[in-house]
Image (cartoon, rainbow, N blue to C red; front, side, top):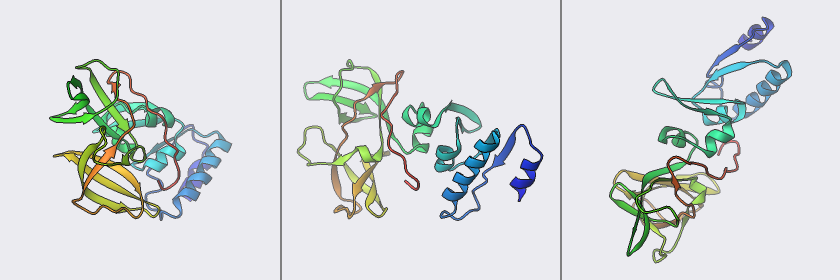
Length: 217
């Protein structure tokens, strides 16, 4: 009713502050789709504030991400999700983001994050500041003997139906999220080895392949 009253005034700009926050999760997708169709039909300009990933993905033609009251990135949803410019944005869109330095020695090529060396494949020169960004579904469990394996320990496991999402500690305070088919054979505290077939990129040139998005993912 509040929305109907506001639209009757034919405002040049409609302001919405977390309009779906009080809705049941089952109702939100339907209401989002309905409102987006209404706004498109009326050609209504809307500024919506939200903390919800799917609000931004489904409703936003242009997305502005703010951290501690400061604008840190803007663009289309596709631009934001494929090219996060900082850790805050990467976490918001569900990406793992590791920032470090390329190290090449007699043992191989690594991304050094803190004191941890993670084997990678890259042509970037030794000493290059780089980042490695990947979705949880882009990492896979692998054999511990694999030369490119990252070794860690399961800290958390969330059952999501057809898959489970593991929080894996690669080192103290160095965590990544990994999606694996359910049921996962590894419990809390179990050692695991990960394969991440994504190449690091220079910090001044960040782009990753977009991940297919679906409601409730």
